Amino acid sequence: MFTGLIREVAKVESFNSGKLKVASKHKAKVGDSIAINGVCLTVTETFNGGFYLNVASETRSIIDDSKFQGKVHLEPAMQMGDRFEGHIVQGHIDTVGEVIKIDNHGNGVDFYIKVPPEQIKYIVPKGSITIDGVSLTVNEVYEDSFRLTIIPHTLENTLIKNYKKGTKVNIETDMFARYIEHILAKKESSKKGLNWSDIDAISMSY
Image (cartoon, rainbow, N blue to C red):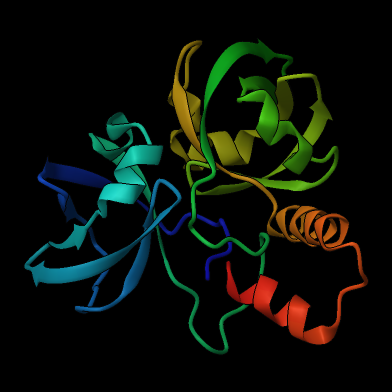
């Protein structure tokens, strides 16, 4: 589990055949879970100044490979006893969005991001969303896009400051919105009320 608070801007040194090599100050261990641009990956090997991670074919089928090039957001998985900020992030990318408009209004910058229409139901005004691993708050939701306002501190400390019109971004929608939609869909299809065993089974599917 992650929080969406970026620990470091690291650098991808290579990405070949599902093997990702990352240069980082973070001292990782084999088996660690680390989110790279919001994607939860497992450390398979370490070296002086970085580590390797494995990227499954299913993950590659969802994300844009360009998100594993150049500088990337890095967040290690939460440890027991860590201070919890941001919001609950799983590191499971739902879709890839595209920046379609940027509006700088002095004390913040509005980013308008387009997503497939079927993902809009999981994006809630004033709710949480993860963009390339960064925990953010949604301001407005439209038919196939949404608006975020990024404050100067976040711009200064993340790669969002480099986004332009057309930039692709990894998106993880709110976990609770997905749970609720799944539960309601199961309830509708079953023609009966859910019991606790049903809810446990649904929860385990995530």
